[in-house]
Length: 354
Figure 1: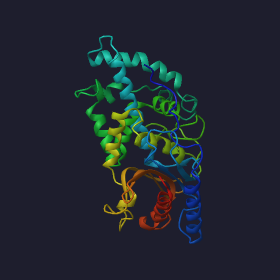
Figure 2 (figure 1 turned 180 degrees about the vertical axis):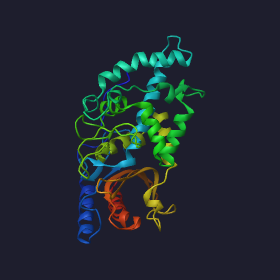
Figure 3 (figure 1 turned 60 degrees about the vertical axis):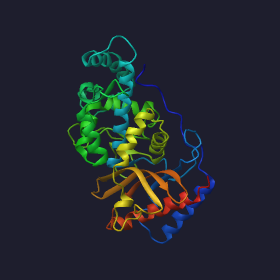
Figure 4 (figure 1 turned 90 degrees about the vertical axis):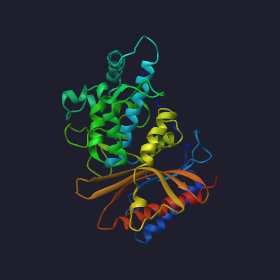
């Protein structure tokens, strides 16, 4: 089997849903006239899930959906998904016959099969970088650091305990060391090659881009972005919403892997729940059931916030993807900072007619 299998079919409808988009535009204009922070620079997309699971017609509405922004820790989602894809591909190699029964045999098979593919799919932004060291351009996954023989019924090849702990650290506890461990286990050539081959990066300057290790141990490869000079951790909300919709539909990597990734995101916190008082309390109408936050400094030293969520409207029993970014801290409390984001997302979800 191949490690690189081509782009996922886009699960989002070809154009914005008119009623949803009209409500979003009107709500943004009202908030802008009222002086609400960030509404004229924020990128936001809301995607309807309920009734469209597994289809290529998910309705959506968005603002600035094609703008590339630095989004800090939000891009840890990409490291998680690429690691899960590596496990799934390695598991297929181990289960395809050929007498691979020990980890040294499987490790040798992965290197023999996957490493040449990674060479062929390494993005030019990595292997042509004038900033990265030669070893950064030619790194291959440290298979034995990330993977080992499985002990459960589902996978012949599973994650090492160190890698499982890293997922917990970076996704549930929102820390950087687990992300560094994961990225160092994968390497930029595989990580960014996989993201691009799956259709989440256009190969030049738009989409999910992760070429920094959250620790400044490795040098970073950067691309242009709107909200900073450049970024090693950036995305458009459009590309990340595609990834999140596939995840919600159990189509990202596979149903078992999607379920495990969602379990990690279900145990993480989210901004709307954590404000004082909560914008979306746990007993309220809108519940962020799964999420990943992004916080990081711009080169201006201002903090910028972002988030990717699966949201449930408990009144109508509907689910949505909400992704937003480029919300810049400029003296407001987090409650005041995030209220306009929630207001716009709520307006779009309310406007959706299943």
